[in-house]
Length: 308
Image (cartoon, rainbow, N blue to C red):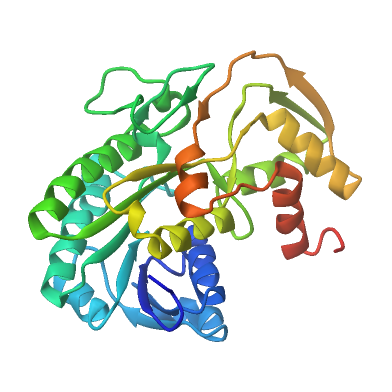
């Protein structure tokens, strides 16, 4: 699908990742419609050329109205973590039932093309080796998985359940779906990983583990979304979009290098790493992941902490 002039609806467009996806699709010439709970939050995206409309994952009719006349949908909205420790039912409502509502609404609106944002948190990954999309098993219950040590289990399990149902539901509905599994994601406007790093950099002394896990910039995930929509060969496939492993110690050391200030960093040796194979996304989606220095430079430029 040539994105030029195409109407692409992005659920959760005003959120951290959604805003980066929206900007990337706008750069590729798409007419982007943000299907969001509070359209007023997207005023700055409207200034860039996007359109905002009210919709909620729990309301199929509002979704169907938002999807009307669309050429494609990017289902990015969901529940990850927030203050107040959401219950498992809240996670299921957003990440499982919400997925089913999106598929039903697409069928109601007559839209066939879907890119769904999942996460590598759905995997039971192996340590100290690359995990590809086929070899790594998806979580199917509560038995211990390494994922649960770094990601809340309610989020991981609800996203895995949602993805299982997505494949079943889209096959029955005849939709053309591509699934992207990013994470961990960082970049400007991130209230989670990037903010934790920013808070750490304000301390005088900061211990930091050398355990390495993937770091993918949100705009690079947006690149993968555009690449998936642009290439019909991605239909019916799931792709890792994660970047190379980076330790918190390395990330903070890079931040300190870019700003010329920060705490005394004390490495905590943990010679373990988690890695995911991005080869299929690089081949089919044109995905490339910037290094941690380039990614953090974007963050710092966005907050005016370092010059161009």
